[in-house]
Image (cartoon, rainbow, N blue to C red; front, side, top):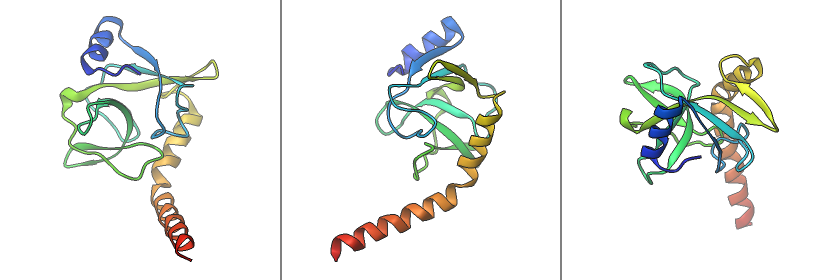
Length: 148
């Protein structure tokens, strides 16, 4: 993906959408780093749970794609699909756009129309508590195994 907030916003204004290869593992299994392309459009007036935002991360200034998992006091709470930590308090001016669709293995998927994607979003959000619990248990077992 594009790494600069101003360049990304400018390209969106000029072209109406931007497409780029994803990098990193925070949105696995949806995106495979360096293999899948994300299609981003300008942000709508209102967001909803399940939307994936492209925004500038406040901790390291990188552009990040993460999913809205809930709202807290009217502000989106964001998390990568394979992550357990959330991020809040993203200023609106740091939001570049929203995921419209993606390309994997030459096939295009529209986030608004593809039923498989909608099922995936439901699963990733609703299964979070059990995935987080499982992660904690496995981490504890690994630590225990190292000490014995």
